[in-house]
Amino acid sequence: MGRRGTHVRVWAPARKNVSIAERFAGSPERGRVQRLTPEGNGYHAGLFEGLGTDALYSVLLDSGLYPDPASRFQPEGPHGPSQVVDATGFDWRDSGFRENVDARVIYELHVGTFTREGTYRAASEQLSELASLGVTMIELMALAAFPGRYGWSYDGVDLWAPSERYGTPDDLRQFVMAAHSQGIAVILDVVYNHLGNDGNYLAPFSADYFSQKHECEWGAGFNFDGPNCGPVREFVLENARYWIEEFHFDGLRVDATQAIFDDTQPHILAELVAAARSGGAALGKPIFIVGENEPQDSTLVRSPEAGGYGFDAVWNDDFHHSARVALTGRHEAYLTDYRGSPQELISALKWGYLYQGQRYQWQSKARGRPALDLDARQFVVYLQNHDQIANQVPGERIDRWTSPAELRAMTALMLLSPPTPMLFQGQEFASSAPFLYFTDVDRSLLSGIDEQRREFVGQFPSMATAQARAVQRSAAERATFELCKLDFGERERHAPVYRLHRDLLRLRREDPAIRQRRSANFHGAVLAERALCLRFLCPEGDRLLITNLGGDLELAPAPEPLLAPPNASGWALLWCSEDYIYGGHGVPDLRQDGVLFVPARCSLLFGPANSEEPGRASTPNRRGNDG
Image 1 (cartoon, one colour):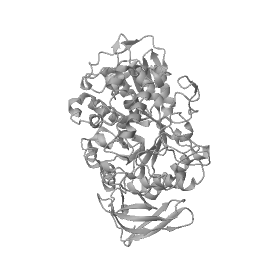
Image 2 (cartoon, helix red, strand yellow):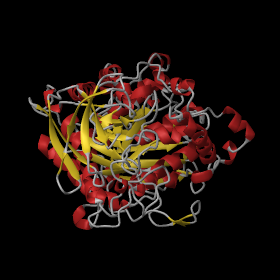
Image 3 (cartoon, one colour):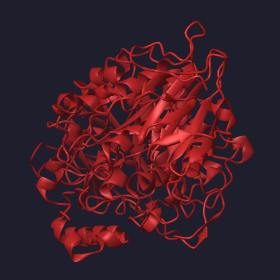
Image 4 (tube, one colour):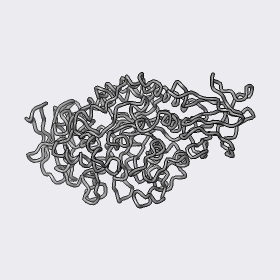
């Protein structure tokens, strides 16, 4: 776009006549029409003089008007006209921002439900609180324009247009810049495995946008390896670069990579990472690329030189599944192959995926690929995320399924361990808001969506009952969406939980042993049927974390070298999840006749005792033990 007008280029190889039609807000009428010139390669291009910033337009294919496939904004939704956006007009003031990689803590956020207003501007008002909590990176759930008044946007249909429901493109830019001013990086969840159905107008431009070779379970999948796939690949690769360059995102989270099909080399995922990194290079900063991959293929995080795709990290569902079973005792459906044992938890924290090629009974096949050489920080671990909460019929969070003490202990285990932790919005203050699947698609599609949800959750026997069906909410009800909005008043009403997360993230950030975050610097051992320990090695003084999800435990005998005291003075208690300030039941004397006593359902963090006062912690009312 320039002072003379706007340059438009459209791929429509089967069309002879492609034009741009000026549109008017809220009106079906069209104004001036400018025909584009065929380039001879399937593209049509031209300058529309006088079509300036904020002007509305549509692409005219024969007699039909359609949104621009690369529309930067759809102010009236996916079915309306596109709007000209001048990305160069925004006054960026974040050139000095760089993410603190070593302190990375991710916070998953859905803009529409994070605040009552459900806008970028309202979300910006909470950034200082997130920074104070210890969050260093926000992961925004998908933003591509979607139909209706509310939705997850994983059925988005305009890849280049951030949803108008949350504000303007400049509002989004302002949010990213405001986050940077608070020291928080922002990454975006992108969906390149399929497009939604309602509002998807790519087919009239070319049927070759979508694969005839591969089938995606959620909708129309992109054609990355079939006839005329070149422009389709370019469409997606440029989109990845666009979010980095024009919105200053600090990276991407790529949804369901296992459903991004490409039988050619280099794989589209490798090219996507390279395209995104080139966007970061244009801004002079590194970026973070994380992938979701249900089959647990470690190829994602291997370097291109090693035959991989070059991602920085992957989500680790195995840790979630094992932790959930440990906290709830339930191992139905895709939790069938987990027992929540201490060894599972240790292995998931130390080695990443639990399944790296072994047989996975739930799917009756091998799952995963070798990942023993990867580092812990390359795995993102979580106790909650948008999918796992919504996969329960009531959409209840994990704190409704377990005891407060056990959840405090497990939260400590996750937040003090080397893998990259992720919190889901409101988790830090035990939000009472559920997170359900909601969508405002065309009503003709709704019954099928609700039935698909019933079928999916029905894989859990406890949720395949008539009673479960009776309480399952329709995805299209406005009340379903409204229920999911956070109430920030719960930060005060649930202050002990909020303080727990603050203190743990401070320890993660400041403690010299905890903040190292390297697989080689920590080891774990099983202490009992429901108890484990992790030893963090550090020249400045080792740390010992004991997590006990069972009953009171006396470690006698204790033939485990990781429990051995670091010096003649023994261990001193630095922190305990059962402290009264966290809503716990207090910390008893941990030394009983030389035997280390571990209270039920708690996590304890120890450091070397002061040699001048053996067995004493540096904080009042906290006793140590001398080994």
